[in-house]
Image (cartoon, rainbow, N blue to C red):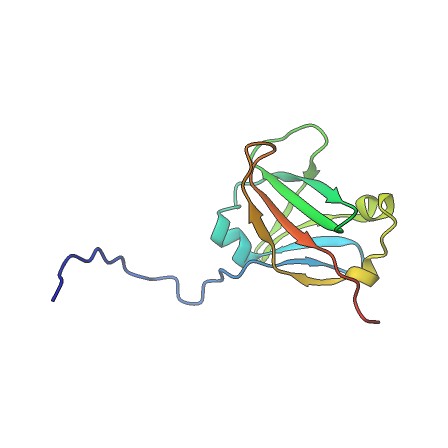
Length: 125
């Protein structure tokens, strides 16, 4: 038997690690506590958002220090939240039509850096 294991004890029973980004029907993006835990986003103070209109893809870049034109992140015990009303109006999107939960893809690029991307899909009303 091979005895060359390097075990670490798992102690986070009940911890959440599933990453989700949700868009509420009222125009806010919510970030799950699982996403905050998995990617260690607890020190984030804000974020910047990017949009690909052709794919209806939204990218989020979390910031650990304040930057010009960032959106302030409201942290909660269950993750975080930002208002996106101005963003949705700029791109003529009704939040009710796109509301729901999305699993983000993590993209790591040298510029602008690590981003989480979702592609918005119209909901069947």
